[in-house]
Image (cartoon, rainbow, N blue to C red; front, side, top):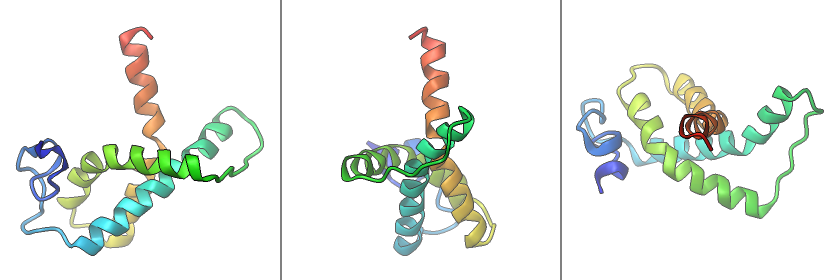
Length: 114
């Protein structure tokens, strides 16, 4: 199960790492930002529907967000680990990757006809 091996890139294809092992602190920071992005995705969905923006934060949603982020993080890391951008830019891209995870799920559902 190489998908979660961040030193080899998402899917275990050897594409990540950026020339060395990733820093554990950087991995944790970017994972936490992906979790925040997933939590904020509900607010993004409200904005897309034209509803008033509210942030409903409760423990079950935080746990679900952490699980979603765990699944999506290797793909986000594959993009970020090879980037030479400053950490602040990587943080923004990590938040974006978390916030728009539902777009990918919706596209997959439409593609499968569900």
